[in-house]
Length: 180
Image (tube, rainbow, N blue to C red):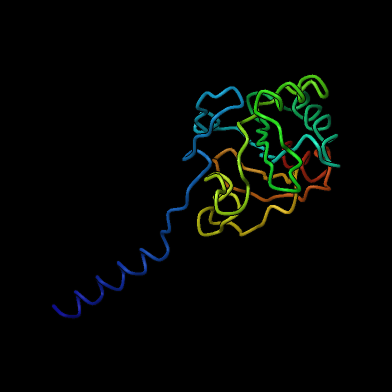
């Protein structure tokens, strides 16, 4: 009897250790740039490129390449989600309305944009906490280095990888990930 209980306990503990339940993208909601609630579970079956953006950054022209990528591959299998953030040298000082107008007027952005958030620090948005914490995503830890860092999430809502801000949205790494 003692031996059976001990085996049961050992199996239970090892099962607990190996069955860590990580979150997926689908566990999150965020406000859109228009103030509506966006449920990421609506993206099931799509690859998602998540990008923290800023309007007054040296990388801001990447909006044009992101839009080009979205127009070419966006649809049933792929989308881009932009998250404006003011975390790096205050390069996104505008309101959500100002950011939206800037993106549309200067770059014709049509991919979904969320409301301005923090991507680091004490007030980090939960989705970025998930993206940057292996404890939550089950894949890897990372730090958002600057504006326009890009996170790749697969069709099952799992983090795949990320690319640094200086990597073009049209890079082979991103395009091949979308196509394969």
